[in-house]
Image (cartoon, rainbow, N blue to C red):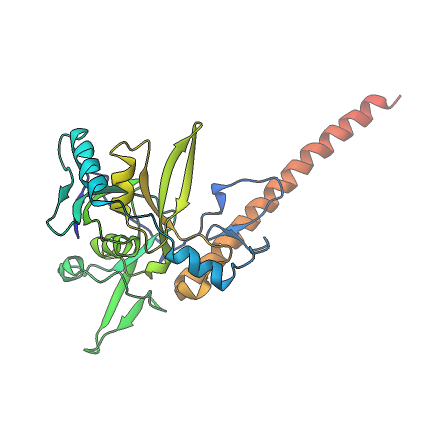
Length: 284
C-alpha cells in the first residue's frame, strides 16, 4: 500500500508530552468534565456481548460479482479525470481513497535529535505500542526519545490500496506513514455520509474493505468519505495511555475545574447583585 500526500499545513508540535485532553469540545449546562472525549462522571455504556462484538467484527460489505465489478469500474473511471481503478487478471482491483485525519489528541512520534535526522527518517510499524515513559530502551541498550505532535486539522491523505486491503491495514499504513508509535487500537476508520443536511459517521469493522465501499458509492465525496478518528468507546482504555499523558490529564483537569468554579461563582455573583437591586427597589 502506497501513501500519497495531499498538500496540507505542516505538522505542529505540542509543548506538552501529550495532553490528550479535549473537554471543551462539547459544552453542557451540567458542567460535566470530559477527558479523552469521555466523561469521568458519565456512566459507561454497557459493553456489548461477546457474540455481538464478534458478529460486528466479521460483518462486512457483500462482494460484488465479476460482472458487477467490471461495470462499476468502467462507470467509476468515466466520472474521474485521473487516479481511476484498475482491474487485475485475478479479479482484484486497485485504486485510490482519500482519508481525512481528524484527531483531537496528539500522537506520539520518535523525537528528532538535534544535528541528526535518523529519527525523522525512521519509520515504525503501526503495531508498535505506546511506551510507558517518554523513553524506551532498545535492544542495543540505547533509549528512544519520543515526543508528541498535533496533526493539522482535517489533514487529507490519498492512499493507493487494493480491493483486498482491510480497514485494519489502512489504519496501520497511515500510522506508519506518519511514524506514529501509538497503539493502532487507539484509532478507528469511519465512513462519513451526508443525509438530510447532516453528517453521519459509522465506524468500519476492521475486516471491512474500504476500496469496495468506494467503488459502490462512486467517486463523489458527498456520498462517501473516510475519516480517521480516535477510537471512541463507552469506556476509556486508560492502559493504552503513557504515564506522561495520564499525568497531563490530571493537570489539565485541575485547571479546567478551577475555570469552571470561577465561572459558576461569577454567574451567581451576577444573580445576587440583581436580587439585591430588586430588594432595594422594594424598600420604602
